[in-house]
Amino acid sequence: MDRKKRLSPVQIITLSFAAVTLCGAFLLMLPISSRSGVPATFIDALFTSTSASCVTGLVIGDTYTLWSPFGQAVIISLIQIGGIGIITLVMYFLSMLHAKIGMRNVFVLQEIMGANSTAGLVKMTRFIAAGILLQELCGALLLMPVFIPDFGVLRGILYSLFHSVSAFCNAGFDLMTYNGGSSLSAYSGNLYVNLVICALIVFGGLGFFVWLDLIKCRFRFSKFALHTKIVVVTTLALVFGGALLFFILFYNSEAAEGMSVYEKAVVSFFQSVTARTAGFYTVDLTKIGGAAQMLMIVLMLIGGSSASTAGGIKTTTLAVIILFVRSIFRGKDDVECFGRRIDKSVIRTAIAIFVLYLGLALGAGIAISAIENADIVACMFETFSAMATVGLSLSLTPTLAPISKSIIIVLMFLGRVGGITVLLSLMGKKSDSAYRYPTENITVG
Image 1 (cartoon, rainbow, N blue to C red):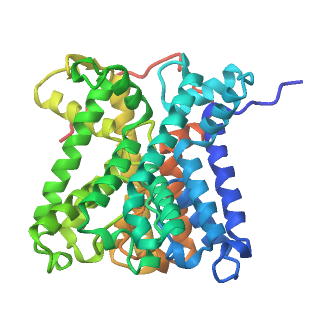
Image 2: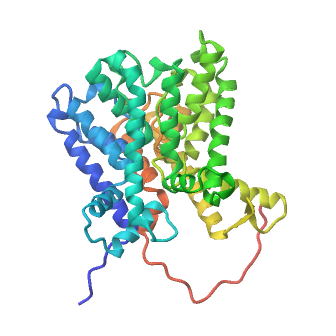
Image 3: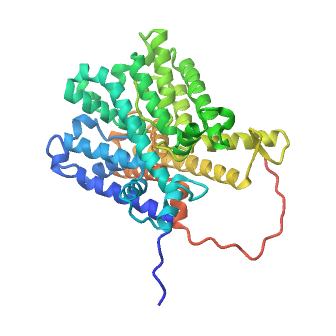
């Protein structure tokens, strides 16, 4: 008798996220999760659970108004699990209990982290979990001096913890309707709050391997691994370049009316950071103008870095594609960066990821526009936000029909688990062909 076919690491990852999402949906359907006491529908509960566990931030309505404290606790728990990763959490607790961890589980962990080898991975889970919790705690402590005076001691502490976790995990869920605001719009001119939230978002989006390399090399750029160098340079370019472009496009928009130059600069910097998968906002995005919205769509598609809490195609993917194009213009066969050559398999993967994300987000946006008879730019904004697990919205999501919400759910799930991971989980075992077809050239361009 043949042995039962065992699940591959990518299938385990996909199923673990699906299981967490479904459990969260059933908890959110309980009457105790709703502030009104009326149970949420399955599609709304599933949408919210997917958005939280996939650290996206798209919502069917205001989080504070719709969900009770119990429901909010479920949401922040899903965000934390989604940010760290259920498998990583399990491995962390097993290692703390000194339980035996088989090589099969280590291979699953390797797939999650995108590591090149299995060496030291179990030890690294402790570093990741401790690092995440420490940074979230520091973020909460930094927010408390502002939130405690605004909300009272108990609520201020809870809100500081909630928004610190939400920011570090790049989720974008907020509870600010209690304060009469929308997302962090009440703090649009508060540089301190903006910088704390931005720091949490950036640190969460750098990636676990980058943290380790930064500490090991004591922040000396010349000692960094190529991956770290590319992540750091690309992140800085996107943050400050995106802020400058957004400032120019936003300056004379309807949303900027009545703001000083200083406030416009703070808003521009914050939106440049949060657009790359965080989901918070400090200004009405429906009034920033079409050009600024398109810029945010581009930033959302790029996202953060690999093996982090962020989504999108990732900064390294963008960098590899740009370097590949540069090598073509220079007539070089090799793609080079910082004195190193990038393998052709990495380039093929980067192009595949870019095409996959772009195609799914565009196709879904067109489909939703046709279903809802809605503005195509607004639909694209929502679908790119979902696919890149950002959570920014032009207020279209709450009005969507169940079928359109289902499309958004699928995009959020694919964006967090990884489109390539899902495709690999559905594919059979790779087999190399014993023959190759003859080559024939075609004309392109």
